[in-house]
Length: 252
Image (cartoon, rainbow, N blue to C red; front, top):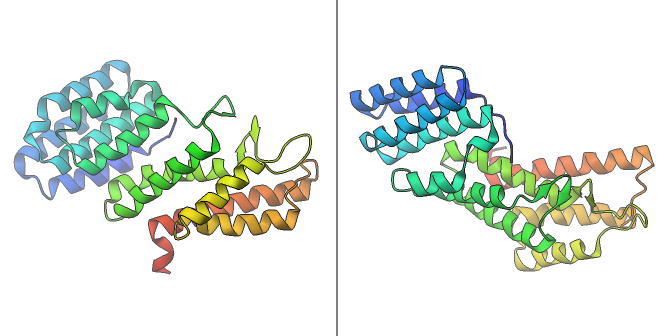
């Protein structure tokens, strides 16, 4: 799992939140910590920032501690995704940060331990992917007001929805030889529509199945126009799923 963060923007956002609610002690800790992050990322600086967190989080409330941990994560990920061990973060920081952030770290730990796609090949079966997607959807819907975790949760959710619609290069939803859509995957779509008809995922799958029916559940990959329409449709539906689960569509 790899995501590039705009660290400077995140520092500005979190530092502002901390300075408004933490007093001089929180401000001092924040200033010292962001000073470390102002230095170019390296293994040494990542470890230095991590050690600073361990020594100082008890001087902050749980929200403030969570905000600094997010800064450290972004700093480390921008340097090397392998430098972030989510199971370690949970073990060492769960008592110091908000429960909802710990829950997000648990989702990330699952994805890190068992990514849905590796080497362009699906690593989980369709049922597991469906369950992960719906579970994450429920988490996002329950925490729409917690803006600090929304971006990361939505990024992971969109990754899952995209895989459910498109598969992966070595695990295509349309068979490369027969051109037929996966019957196993259609079975999982029907399960979502039956078990979770009010979910955002069900809404986009209903629209997707109408599109697939129009294709006769088969796709000619070598037909450029048809292939381009497939990718365009999937991209649009992923964005629609994001808007639905985040509640953005309700604001229009």
